[in-house]
Length: 71
Image (cartoon, rainbow, N blue to C red; front, side, top):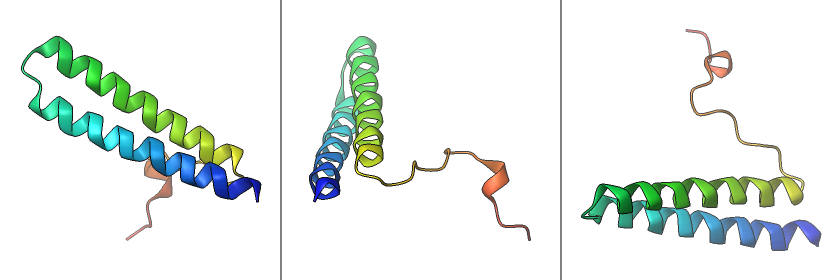
């Protein structure tokens, strides 16, 4: 059951990333906003790593043109 704990851990990091993003939207200074967005990116990277450790394939790139279905 190695993959199950990593999946829960990945979900935890994704929830933290969502919280950081919502806090960044409410941040009053530019420095705070940038720091929260960096924290969000770190949490998302950690979630991807936890998925990888659990045996799941990596997510596709955000703007991968090669993965589009031809019209």
